[in-house]
Amino acid sequence: MKRAFNRIWRLIVAFAIILAASGEVSAIDLTGQASIIDGDTIEIHGTRIRLWGVDAPESSKLCRGEDSLQYRCGTKAANDLDAFINGRLVNCVPISLDRYGRTVASCAAGEIDLADWLIRNGLALDWPQSVKLSARLSMLDADCGRAGMSRLGCIELASA
Image (cartoon, rainbow, N blue to C red; front, side, top):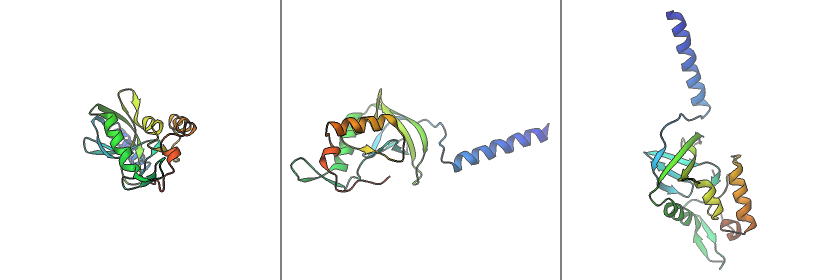
Protein backbone atom coordinates (compact mmCIF):
# COMPACT_ATOMS: atom_id res chain seq x y z
CA MET A 1 0.00 0.00 0.00
CA LYS A 2 2.79 2.40 0.93
CA ARG A 3 4.61 1.58 -2.34
CA ALA A 4 1.50 2.40 -4.36
CA PHE A 5 1.14 5.70 -2.51
CA ASN A 6 4.81 6.57 -3.15
CA ARG A 7 4.45 5.70 -6.82
CA ILE A 8 1.34 7.89 -7.13
CA TRP A 9 3.05 10.71 -5.26
CA ARG A 10 6.07 10.54 -7.60
CA LEU A 11 3.76 10.69 -10.62
CA ILE A 12 2.00 13.76 -9.19
CA VAL A 13 5.34 15.49 -8.53
CA ALA A 14 6.62 14.57 -12.01
CA PHE A 15 3.43 15.93 -13.57
CA ALA A 16 3.77 19.18 -11.60
CA ILE A 17 7.37 19.58 -12.76
CA ILE A 18 6.37 18.99 -16.38
CA LEU A 19 3.60 21.59 -16.11
CA ALA A 20 5.98 24.11 -14.53
CA ALA A 21 8.59 23.51 -17.21
CA SER A 22 6.04 23.89 -20.00
CA GLY A 23 4.99 27.33 -18.78
CA GLU A 24 1.49 26.32 -17.74
CA VAL A 25 -0.05 28.40 -14.96
CA SER A 26 -2.08 27.04 -12.10
CA ALA A 27 -5.62 28.21 -11.50
CA ILE A 28 -4.75 31.00 -9.08
CA ASP A 29 -7.23 33.69 -8.15
CA LEU A 30 -6.68 36.51 -10.60
CA THR A 31 -9.75 38.58 -9.88
CA GLY A 32 -9.54 41.99 -8.29
CA GLN A 33 -8.65 45.64 -8.70
CA ALA A 34 -6.13 46.01 -11.49
CA SER A 35 -3.20 48.40 -11.48
CA ILE A 36 -2.11 49.40 -14.97
CA ILE A 37 1.59 48.80 -15.60
CA ASP A 38 1.48 49.65 -19.31
CA GLY A 39 -0.88 49.19 -22.25
CA ASP A 40 -0.72 45.40 -22.21
CA THR A 41 0.33 44.60 -18.63
CA ILE A 42 -1.70 44.86 -15.45
CA GLU A 43 -1.17 43.77 -11.87
CA ILE A 44 -3.70 42.06 -9.58
CA HIS A 45 -2.84 41.01 -6.01
CA GLY A 46 0.87 41.52 -6.74
CA THR A 47 0.81 39.30 -9.85
CA ARG A 48 2.00 40.88 -13.10
CA ILE A 49 -0.28 39.85 -15.94
CA ARG A 50 0.50 40.22 -19.63
CA LEU A 51 -2.72 40.48 -21.63
CA TRP A 52 -2.97 37.58 -24.03
CA GLY A 53 -3.44 38.31 -27.71
CA VAL A 54 -2.17 41.90 -27.94
CA ASP A 55 0.96 44.00 -28.08
CA ALA A 56 0.75 47.62 -27.00
CA PRO A 57 3.66 50.03 -27.33
CA GLU A 58 5.81 50.65 -24.26
CA SER A 59 5.07 53.88 -22.39
CA SER A 60 8.03 55.72 -23.93
CA LYS A 61 7.23 54.76 -27.54
CA LEU A 62 6.21 57.48 -29.97
CA CYS A 63 3.58 57.37 -32.69
CA ARG A 64 2.48 59.98 -35.21
CA GLY A 65 -1.04 61.35 -35.03
CA GLU A 66 -3.22 62.38 -37.96
CA ASP A 67 -1.55 65.79 -37.71
CA SER A 68 1.88 64.09 -38.17
CA LEU A 69 2.94 65.18 -34.69
CA GLN A 70 4.54 62.63 -32.39
CA TYR A 71 2.85 61.60 -29.17
CA ARG A 72 3.42 58.90 -26.53
CA CYS A 73 1.07 56.23 -27.82
CA GLY A 74 2.16 53.77 -25.12
CA THR A 75 1.19 56.22 -22.40
CA LYS A 76 -2.13 56.83 -24.17
CA ALA A 77 -2.83 53.08 -24.29
CA ALA A 78 -2.12 52.70 -20.56
CA ASN A 79 -4.15 55.78 -19.59
CA ASP A 80 -7.11 54.82 -21.78
CA LEU A 81 -7.08 51.26 -20.40
CA ASP A 82 -7.06 52.64 -16.86
CA ALA A 83 -10.00 54.94 -17.68
CA PHE A 84 -11.90 52.07 -19.29
CA ILE A 85 -11.46 49.75 -16.29
CA ASN A 86 -12.35 52.66 -13.99
CA GLY A 87 -11.96 50.72 -10.75
CA ARG A 88 -14.11 47.76 -11.84
CA LEU A 89 -13.07 44.25 -10.89
CA VAL A 90 -10.95 42.52 -13.51
CA ASN A 91 -11.13 38.75 -13.93
CA CYS A 92 -8.22 36.95 -15.61
CA VAL A 93 -7.91 33.37 -16.80
CA PRO A 94 -4.23 32.31 -16.80
CA ILE A 95 -2.91 30.76 -20.01
CA SER A 96 0.88 30.53 -19.61
CA LEU A 97 4.00 32.37 -18.47
CA ASP A 98 6.02 34.65 -20.73
CA ARG A 99 9.81 34.70 -20.95
CA TYR A 100 9.93 37.31 -18.15
CA GLY A 101 7.92 35.13 -15.76
CA ARG A 102 4.74 37.16 -16.05
CA THR A 103 1.43 35.38 -16.14
CA VAL A 104 -0.13 35.60 -19.60
CA ALA A 105 -3.90 35.67 -19.26
CA SER A 106 -7.15 36.53 -20.94
CA CYS A 107 -8.71 39.29 -18.83
CA ALA A 108 -12.07 41.01 -18.77
CA ALA A 109 -13.69 43.93 -16.99
CA GLY A 110 -17.30 42.94 -16.69
CA GLU A 111 -18.16 41.14 -19.92
CA ILE A 112 -15.59 42.97 -22.07
CA ASP A 113 -12.27 41.33 -22.95
CA LEU A 114 -9.47 43.87 -22.36
CA ALA A 115 -7.33 42.73 -25.31
CA ASP A 116 -10.30 42.97 -27.63
CA TRP A 117 -11.14 46.44 -26.27
CA LEU A 118 -7.55 47.66 -26.77
CA ILE A 119 -7.52 46.48 -30.39
CA ARG A 120 -10.98 47.82 -31.22
CA ASN A 121 -9.94 51.21 -29.88
CA GLY A 122 -6.72 51.27 -31.88
CA LEU A 123 -4.49 51.16 -28.79
CA ALA A 124 -2.77 47.81 -29.42
CA LEU A 125 -2.03 45.37 -32.20
CA ASP A 126 -2.55 41.65 -32.48
CA TRP A 127 0.26 39.76 -30.75
CA PRO A 128 1.61 37.42 -33.47
CA GLN A 129 2.69 34.68 -31.03
CA SER A 130 -0.91 34.07 -30.01
CA VAL A 131 -3.70 32.52 -31.96
CA LYS A 132 -6.47 34.52 -30.36
CA LEU A 133 -9.14 34.64 -33.04
CA SER A 134 -11.22 37.40 -31.43
CA ALA A 135 -8.14 39.65 -31.23
CA ARG A 136 -7.33 39.05 -34.89
CA LEU A 137 -10.91 39.81 -35.92
CA SER A 138 -10.84 43.00 -33.85
CA MET A 139 -7.57 44.00 -35.53
CA LEU A 140 -9.19 43.53 -38.93
CA ASP A 141 -12.12 45.69 -37.82
CA ALA A 142 -9.77 48.41 -36.57
CA ASP A 143 -7.64 48.23 -39.71
CA CYS A 144 -10.65 48.38 -42.01
CA GLY A 145 -11.88 51.44 -40.15
CA ARG A 146 -8.33 52.85 -40.10
CA ALA A 147 -8.66 53.32 -36.32
CA GLY A 148 -5.95 54.15 -33.84
CA MET A 149 -2.54 52.58 -34.34
CA SER A 150 -3.64 51.07 -37.67
CA ARG A 151 -3.79 54.54 -39.16
CA LEU A 152 -1.30 56.36 -36.94
CA GLY A 153 1.85 54.63 -38.11
CA CYS A 154 3.72 53.77 -34.94
CA ILE A 155 7.42 54.52 -35.09
CA GLU A 156 8.36 51.49 -33.00
CA LEU A 157 6.16 48.92 -31.31
CA ALA A 158 6.98 47.06 -28.13
CA SER A 159 8.18 43.51 -28.57
CA ALA A 160 6.46 40.73 -26.70
